Structure formats: C-alpha cells, structure tokens
Image (cartoon, rainbow, N blue to C red):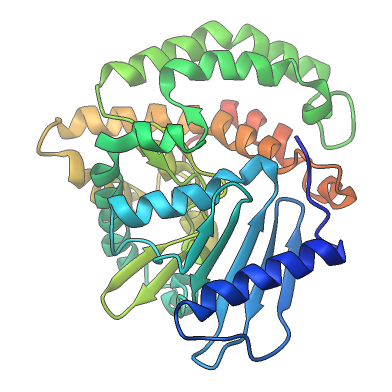
Length: 325
C-alpha cells in the first residue's frame, strides 16, 4: 500500500492541473490559491472559482475507494449526495461543488430536523441495496454480518493497531476478554443476518457535520468510513452524536423516536419489533466496524496518525458498552 506524499511539488502540480481541466469542461476556472486541510487519511482543498468555491479531495490508500463510491451513489441514488464535478477513482481524487450549510450549522438544538434527515438517509440505503455488489466491485469494504467474526479475529491479532499494552491502547486483559467473547459475537452476527435486511452502504460516521441542508432536501457527504454492511449500523454513530450534542442519556425516549423514524423505511417488509431488535444488534456489531474503519484510515506512515491512533482500540472496547437506545 503506497501512501502519497501530498507535499511533493510534482503531486501538487498534477492535482492542480486535474482540477483545472475538470473545471474547464464546465466553463469554470481557478481564481486564487487553494486552501488546504490535511489529515492522515485525506487532503482537502477549498478551490476558489468565479462561480463560488469547489472542493477537491484526495484520499490515502485506506480510504481511496471513497471517490468511486461517490460516483456510484450519485448514479444509484440521485439527489442524495453531491453530484461530483469529476472523479478519478484510481487515484482516489474527487471534485465536488460547494454543499452550502451543514446540518450542524442550522440545527440549533432542533432535533426535529433529524426526524426528516434519517428517513431521507434510509431511503438512500434502500435504493442502493439492490446494487450493493457494484459498491463491493468498486472497492468499498465488505462488512456484511457474516464476515464480521473473521474481521474481528484479524483485528484482535493486530497488536500494533490496537496499541496492546500501551497508553490509550487495549490492555492484555481486555484483549483476552474480547477473544473469549468471539463465539457470542459470531452468534450476534448470525442472528442479525437472519432478519434478512439486505446489506447496503453504511456511512459509519453519519453526524450533523456530514449532512448538507439544501433547498430541495439533504445531501450526505464524507463517505471515507463507509462500508457495505447491515444498514442499521449507522445508528451507532448518529444516535451517539445526537445524545452527546444535547446531553441525552442512553435510552432517552428522544433517541428511540429517532431510531423508529429511521426504521420506518423498512416497515413495509418487516415487523417493527424485529426491526428494533435488529437495530440493537447492528449497533453492537458496528463498534467493530468503526474500529476497522479507523484502522484503514490510519494505514499510513504519516506521523500525525498518532493523534488519532487510540480510536482503533477505543471503538473495539465499545463492544462491551451500552447502545444509545
């Protein structure tokens, strides 16, 4: 896995030329210097143009599939994501229009907006599910329930990523407890698969900062943590972030209403009680998915990765935590 050196002048020149060519095809041009934001897993440029800013994103190998995923989602669920101006899937490059204000910008504590956002996101997942194989073919990670026990085994063997015995890492005792839990985890995954809800794209980091609010609905973005998985795993991050943002305790009835608003998209085929049970199991399994997504994102020699490395063991440890609802 080769990591790109984003400070290399030749790389920067090539990326700027690509952006310029893509904009020219739409009758636009760069009008000033780009404004960078760099993380170990991606580089983002705010690119000024005469018709407003656009956004260039380059992903490192662990999240490179995001560019191809964006193109697929724009085709499979039009109007739910920003239509890319250009995508280079092989290089993990994407160029997107400005999305306007985020949900975080406009929320102001009004959780009723989530009652509209979550059904819109669920509709995206329902629309994409029949074509989940296309996402896998595009390189999106496969986190379907039947594969998660094996993925957990591999994760538990990765002492470096789990920082075993190091500050902010797994203790040897917790790793032993997780190993002993594997048969129960496998049973949870089997039970989750038995409900028969089709796998779909699972954002895995859906919070109010990753939703744009537009005049004609919502646009979901920042798909670098996504996988093909049980769709309900999304609720882990979403409900936790809502609870954290407004100070709700786990099990608060508000969180239950948000969960049920999300699950409504599947009530034409499944019993509501079964859907709630599946949601609880999916959120448990998603703690492993979150750990895996962080491990992918940090598969880079960038020294800055150390700032985020505790997220890999941290999310895995949440396997024994309490779900938000």
